[in-house]
Length: 65
Image 1: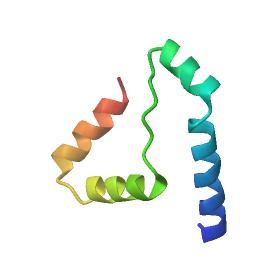
Image 2: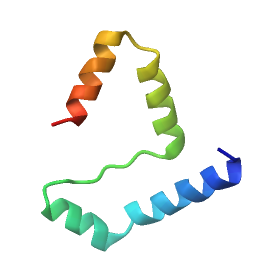
Image 3: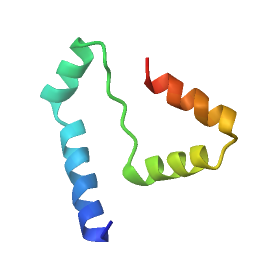
Image 4: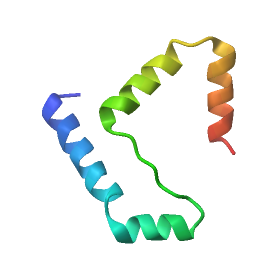
C-alpha cells in the first residue's frame, strides 16, 4: 500500500478511536476500545504470523467468538 494511503488510514482510524461519542457507545455495548498505534499493530501481526501454527490457530479461534 502506498505510504500516503497508509498514513491517511492510520490518521482516520486514530481520529475515530479518539472520538468520545464512539468510545462511549462502544463502552455501553460492552466493547471497550483500547487501540494501539498502527505501527504497533503492524509489529504484533508480524510476530503472530511468524509464530507456530498452533498459536496462529488459537488467535484465529479467539476472533470467532
